[in-house]
Image (cartoon, rainbow, N blue to C red; front, side, top):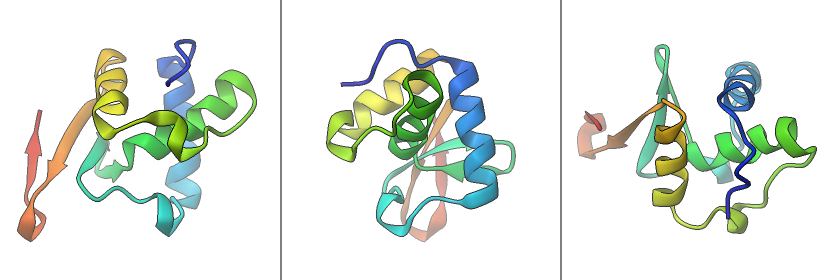
Length: 93
């Protein structure tokens, strides 16, 4: 379950951190990306890192449920989620 106090600002701070350091290979997304600027980020990992700014610890992958929950939360905060298709095509939602 995603803590409901993670804010847009927390997500933006997480995106800044990931722009510098990237995401671990095991935390890469296989289906969805959060589109920000000219880059895509794994939505569940973005929320895990954003929780460090909101609550002081990184969320464990199992705490986030499926990608649908993370995607819906990020959309609610005003972010764009894209679907990765075969051949690196991206569909915007």
